[in-house]
Length: 171
Image 1 (cartoon, helix red, strand yellow):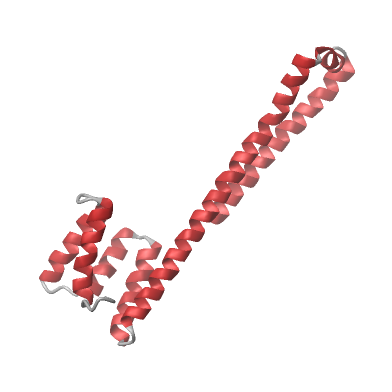
Image 2: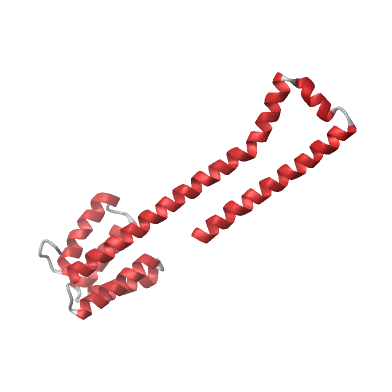
C-alpha cells in the first residue's frame, strides 16, 4: 500500500511474499489464493477477512479484520492505521515470545533445582560415605532424613504448582 497499490492489489502482492516465506501449500497461502479468487468474483476484501477471522478463531486475526473494516469505512489514513495495527501486533507477538522464553527458562531452573539435592547426596556418598552412615545408620538419622525427604517432596510439588500457575496465567 505504501508503494501506491490499492488494498486489493497489495493483498495480491502479499500473497507472493507468503508463498515465498511459507511455501505454496501452506495454510496461509491456500487461504490467500481462495481470498483472491473470491475478490475476482467481486467479494469485498473486508468481508473475506471477517469470514477468515470467524473461521480461524484467532484473536489477532479477528482484531485485524475488525480494524481493517473500520479503517476502510472511516475513510482516514488507511495506510497509517494498518501500519500502526501491524506494529502493535508484532510488538505483542514479540512480548509473548519473550514471556514464553522466560517461562521456559524458569521451568528449566526448577528442574535443575529439583535434582540438585540428589546430586549432593550422591557426591557426599562417593566422597565421604561415613558421613551418610551417621544419618542412615540409626533410628534418629532415618527419622530426620525421612522428614527431609517429605520436605523435598513437598518442595517439588510446590515448585510444580508455581510453574503451572505461572504458565496458565500467561496463556
